[in-house]
Image 1 (tube, rainbow, N blue to C red):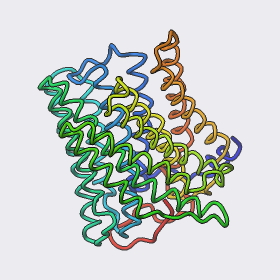
Image 2: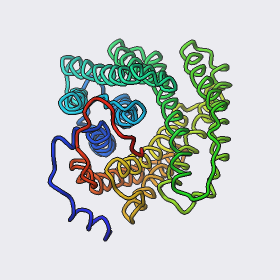
Image 3: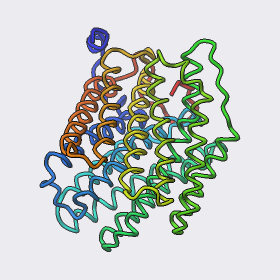
Amino acid sequence: MVESSQIRKQLPAPQWAAFLSLGFRPLYIAGCFWAAISVALWIYAPQWLTGVLAGMLWHAHEMLWGFVATIAVGFLLTASANWTGINPLHGRALGGLTLLWIVARAGFLMPGSIAFGIATLCELLFFGIAALALGRVIYQKRSQRNYGIPLLVLGLGVADGLFLWFIQAGDYALLMESFHAGLLCMAVIALLIARRVIPFFAMRAVQGLTIPMLTGSGQWQLAASIFAIVFLLLGWTSAAAIALAAAGTLALWQLLAWKPWAVRQVPLLWILYTGYAGLGIGLLVAAAYSAGWISRAAWPVHVIGVAGFAILIIGMVTRTALGHLGRPLRTDRSMVILYMLIITAAVLRLAALLPTAYVPGLLHGSSAIWISAFVLYLWRFLPMLIRPRADQSPPVIKPGNIPAQPH
């Protein structure tokens, strides 16, 4: 921990301008904070979940849209500045977006239909504004390879809105359809991000490593994933199973082509490889569920969500934060511990899905380790996220051309 202690001593004073300069700063903090708090509430204080959105449905909603999708939006708002040379949201606009997120989280915890309505409005505005901001810069700069990203973020918001609508309507079947659509929409975003950045990060970090970008297979994977969403919404489960199996198989094939053995000594890379493997396996498990080979929906949800999204996220929020904060791209002991905690939490959570007498202990153990991991992330990174870059570059990127930075 010596290196992290030295970094803390060298940090300048916190600045609002720096904190609100790029989307990853407030939204990484918000998402990781909520990852810890929401699991603590769900496992250790479920009696406090008294809102219209309560119990298991609150937990499912907050994990997908309150945590995972929030981190994705933070990354995309930051990455799109690199792709286009224009910062889509900063300053008061970014602060307003973060405030919408905060009001939504609080509103879903409060009892009564008024609080639920306000939370729903803020939630939909959050995704709508993020999609519009991304679309404005991407379409303005004619960044054709990114044209689908604003639509996917909008799709996340639409699935969220349908989920919340069916909560009030009391239609559990349609509610779960909306949840699975949102989960797969998030999976498509994760696949798009990961297959772009992982080879790029790996070739920069490992001298002499050459990795094929596999653009053609990526397009087939994207098509299979979108078809899977459409088929599920239409109720064509057999067709959805085939599409999900294709997307998962392509993910694992891509992973092997990325030469995972070459990155075994680079924690910033092997954590991303591990998360991508979890996502690919999760899609295969989802295919098995759609085909009727697995009876519990909890299996695909948790393999994709915990072994896939969560492990990818912890890799992304450390690697991209270091890059955009002007820090050396290397891990210290606390970060390696953080990675091992998340992986352990994922393994225990999946083990808790097995019908054994150890389920309560596994759930509590997984939750405690999960919470510890995100608290450790905030302890390690929050002081840097609220301060200017280490290289003292300007904290606010004005609309217009900006220099490219590593993600």
